[in-house]
Image 1: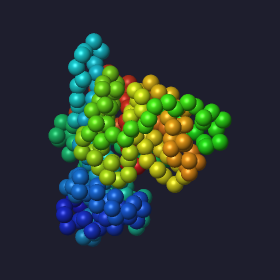
Image 2: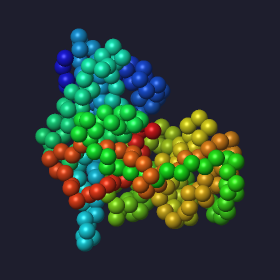
Image 3: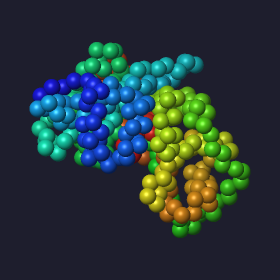
Image 4: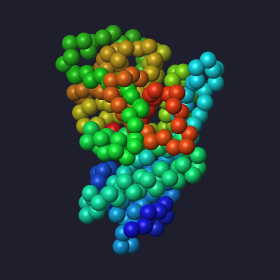
Length: 276
C-alpha cells in the first residue's frame, strides 16, 4: 500500500473510480480537474492501481473576533470526493488516506481539514476520526401545492456573475465565522450548473436536481417563502424547493483542527459543499 499525492498518470483511474462511486458526468469531472488540478488529489495505490482517492482543496475560514473590526482568515482544507474501490472497502484505507491529508496539512500550518458527510452513519464514522461537528445551516422545504406559495414577489430576479456574487456574499457574511470560497470556486460552480441571483436586498444561488430546485444559499432580509414563490413562478415545472440559509437547523460540516485551532469559535457557516 502506497499513500501519496496524485500525479497526472493517475487521472484515468481517478476518473474511472469517480464515475463508478459518484455517477458524475465526464463534463463535471473534467471541469473539476481543470479548475483544481489532479495534484490536489491524494491516492492509495495497491498493486500499481488506484484503490482510493480524496481531494484536498485549500480555502480559508473567515472569522470576526469580538471587539475587532477586522475579519481574520485561517487557511483550511476542504476534503472532497473521498472514494474507495468496492474491492478495498472496510479495510481502513480511507482512514489512512485522510490521516495523510491531515498530516500534510498540519506540516503546512493549516488550521484544519473539513468535509461534509453524506449521511448520519458517515458523520459517526468521521467523529471516530476526531472530526467535530462545527458547521451548521438552516433548511426549509417548500412544495408546489403549499398554500402560501403565492406570496407577493414584487421586483425582478436578476442573474449575476460569479464574481459579483463573491463580492456581495463577503459583505453579508463578514460578521460570521464562515468558509470563504475564492472567486475561482464560484466560476467552477457556474460552469457546472449553479445560478447566482440578486432579488431586492438578497442574493441567492440555486441549481436543479430532478424535480427539485435547491437553493444552496440565501443571504439577506427577504423571507425564504418569498424566494420560493419567485422560483415557483419562474420555473413552474418543479415540484419542490429546498432553501438553505444561515442557521442552526442541522450540522452540514465537520472539522478536524490542526495546529491552529480557533477554540473561541463555537460554530461556523459552510455552504456549497459539492457532495450535496
